[in-house]
Amino acid sequence: MADNIIAELRQLLQDVIAPDLKSLGVKMDGLQKQVELSEKSVNAQIEVFRAELNAFRAEMRSEFQSQRLLLQNEVLRETSPIREGVASLESRRA
Image (cartoon, rainbow, N blue to C red; front, side):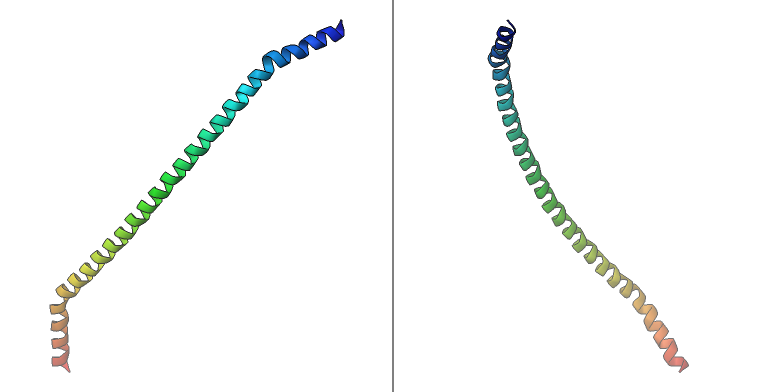
């Protein structure tokens, strides 16, 4: 009788639980593949974003450098008459 119950439990496990476990394993494999594909897609998008961000940074650096040079030229242009006046005064004093 105990052997019969054990045999019936084994059969129940094989008939009911084993197919469900196999089905769950297949679903897990599918989900794992989806996660991997999503991860690759996200990583590719991150790389594109990084490239765009680096290009933007380079553009901003270039623009800041250009603005700095323009400002320096403006300062030199505005202070040139003052420097000339100071130089003229110094040459008269000497």
